[in-house]
Length: 104
Image 1 (cartoon, one colour):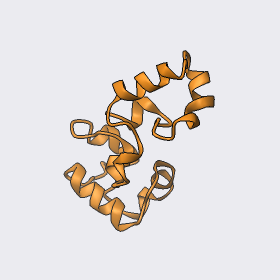
Image 2 (cartoon, one colour):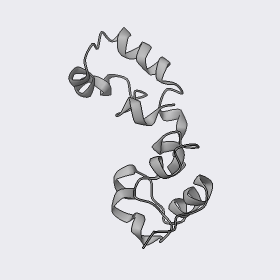
Image 3 (cartoon, one colour):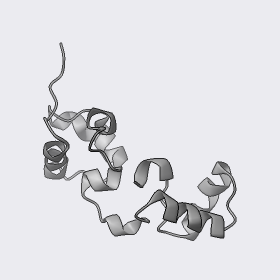
Image 4 (spheres, one colour):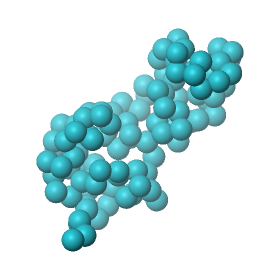
C-alpha cells in the first residue's frame, strides 16, 4: 500500500508546525503523528527543499545563509577536515552542525 503524503512542502511544513516539532530529531520521532508527513521530507519534496531549519520554521538567522559563507568562516578558523569541523563548529555558533544539510 502506497502512503499518501501532503501534496506540497508548504502543507507538510504546516503539519509539522501544528505538531510543535522544532528539530530534525524530534521530527524523526514524531512524524507519524500526522499521516501525511513522510519520514524523509528532504527526499519527498526535493524540488523545493532547502534545509531542516527552514522546513521547521526555525529562526534562519542562526546559521550563515549560504554554504559559501559558512565555508569561508570554517577556513578562517583553519578547519581543514570533517572530524576537526565536528569538534570545533561550536567556535562560531552560526556554523551549521551539518553544513551539507542545513544551509542552501
